Length: 312
Length: 312
Image 1: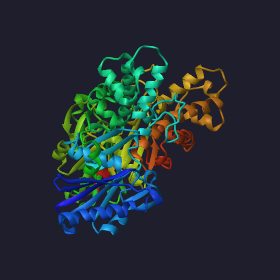
Image 2 (image 1 turned 90 degrees about the vertical axis):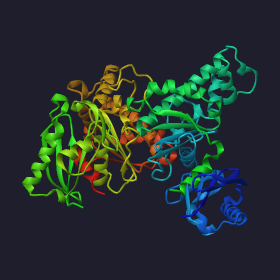
Image 3 (image 1 turned 60 degrees about the horizontal axis):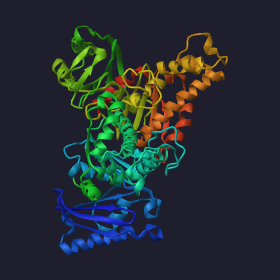
């Protein structure tokens, strides 16, 4: 087995790449732009060129490489079949594993980016020491990655872990990006928190520092820390939706731990307090002791997880 | 590897036992009483005696037995550790695999009964041909079993698949058996359907055959088939809760198929029609094509699944 591997995380604007040793130490880390023009046809050739160039620069031979792991924003079957990835311009189904192997001549494994980030957090992040975890990414949307016995739960067509789109509110009149109404994402993503905040601010005239500037998930939780009453009500609503949603997920999966990441999680432990209160209310007793922690790898979770894909 | 195996399903009143060949043909099937007195201390010795007696009757040697699979009504870790099983009188944690192996001198594997029934339905029942499925048992309560890549999803402490206790209704004043409010089981188990029925009957004075006799899940769906308006409203409410619940589960797991069993499912395909309508409304698009079917093994799902546990 090779001494090195590559972990690659393909995003809508940049591709993050990492060169790792097989113990999981990152030796080099860089980015290239994601060229989505022409249906994203340059993305894989650009990645192949960058990987092969790095090997030449470092004088690493193919025989020394255990493999290349790659995560993409869309459903990916365990075979490597990608079911479109709208953010990348990919509008057809194709096998990314086969195509990238043909370009670089090194074994490739592929997966969905949220699932792979979960694997990264298990390996080197907040979930270390656990084999059954759910990673929750609270960013522009809400993503999820499920790890069962150390392996990604992919689902029938790579669509497992779409926890941002579990139905959580019957009385919602605004449509979610997915086309449904009342998805978890509508209340607990960074943009969802702003929606909640504006609704609550509009419905009362209690004074709040949030009335003085731009409302973001950061300003909301900053205000919570100063004891702002309206901000605390917003945080409570956020915690109710997320605590309820994670309680449902725990009753299904009985994980060891939830690892909470994404931009919203930068507010720190304060968010766990609000989640926990409602989690305990709604969860089945067999899963009441599931742990909660914050993600620690930030934007690097994807390259770590992608590297882990090819290391067993 | 041996030519035969035993599949055992321990219930609160009877223990079902099956002798199988390793292709999954049942060669013999029988029951013994479950003696729950004295904290259920006789249950495993009674099972061991029955298994050993059967081997003597059939002139089968230990070397010919691939193993003994056993399902119990409670959380079971993959190690065989049982976390109490109140219906059996077992009030402490112990390793059922080790204890039963010591009694019979044959390798044992153990699991939760609902999970094992799911494995049985995958192997020889409604889920044949699929490796990722969720079995839903609509009986006195609502149980679930999750199979991922052909293997039971056990969870951290054996509490995965408790889908009867996902929170589905915020406005519920009656407590579920688990201590929470608004669990899926409160609306979709046999007893839950009767509750729904009585609420709907009490809230209107529309004529209905259901006003003339005992209301059970069977009489409700029988009345649906005759076009009874109130019964159809009850079935619609049932379908809304279950369709919504299964949509949430599908967004998390992205299974290939749901296999619906238990007493309620004896009403037949009519229940799938009511589930499907709401499932499609609430599910994330990546899981909209998940299949639905009825379980076919009935009360034998447990012995089939238990046998499958020890055959790979």
